[in-house]
Length: 71
Image: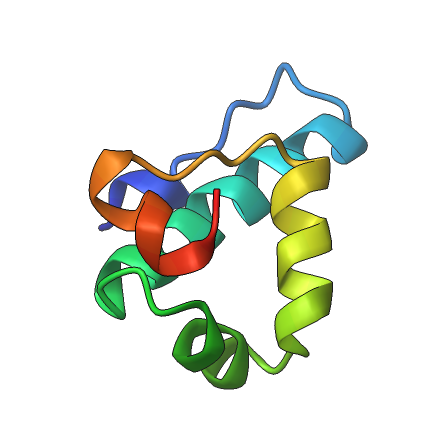
């Protein structure tokens, strides 16, 4: 079982959802080597919507991906 599927039952639903979304998006970004367009396409979002979601979830890509995705 993947690490991001572990559930902390002490969280409210909103917190649990944001934790899941953050882990899921980070895993997909890694899968596509930092390519946000491919990541967005795979998960079914517009690229700009994914950028907004990343900002909302405080996802700051590591140094390797910053130049690729403009952070």
